[in-house]
Length: 338
Image 1 (cartoon, helix red, strand yellow):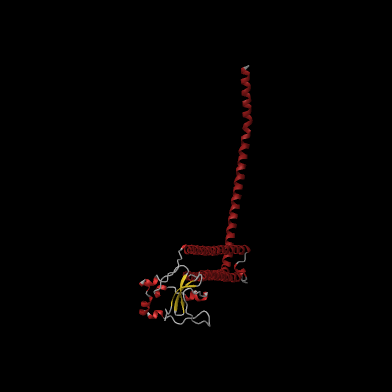
Image 2 (cartoon, helix red, strand yellow):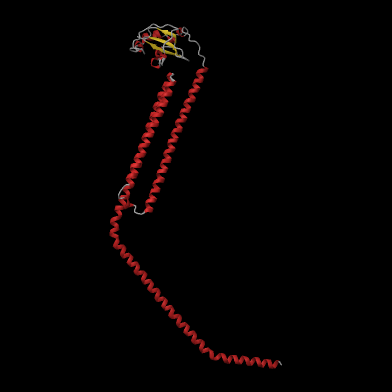
């Protein structure tokens, strides 16, 4: 049984080998045909690539030729565009510089006005006229504000003139022909002006805050001084005590310094008023002891220093010590001046 199966398998193998032998030449021919077709396709692809490469080279050459042909015309137009842009930029920068100079001039002038007002107010406070000092402060502040506002309006007018020249120029499209470029320029200009406005507002607010702080400090100092004056002991003036002190020997000092006591003509506050000899206890009208008649430096004439509501006042050739709250004459020296 096993021998029969072995013979059967050998026969089948021999039959398969006999059938495969005639097929070998056909396979070789098919392979040769495939190789020939592949070589032909590769040659066609190489030829197509060479044609495309040559076409690209020709296009480059044409572009270079056109660029060389346009080059003279562009070289003529570009300098003109650059010059127009530079002129517009120069006008804009000049307007900005002029506006800034105008603002700085107005700020410096306002500061000078404020400092002058502060000095005048301080002098008025030293002389005792606090009402006049407050009025001087208010006047100087109002004037400084007007000067600053005027300077800001002038600077804004300068910027508006510069802006109108830029945007109403009939040749502006020659520089910015594209709409997107014009929009970008407008946005950049708007941002620049917004930053400048913000800086200007910040400086203005800082100056106002500084002025408010200064006024607050002045008012605080005034209140403190008023409280100190209120706490001071306003004793009744002793007209005999200071005369016993040789330090205030005005008579001998006047004999050695006669020109110092020659003050010139006395102008009374009333036109038809004539001299009347005053005595202690007399009440003067407030016009006679205004600050224009005060003796601010009593020691210059060897008179004692005063305190509280008392002030040395010139009355014709006499010197009078007056209580400026009540107008009462508390001390008098007749024929004190020449």
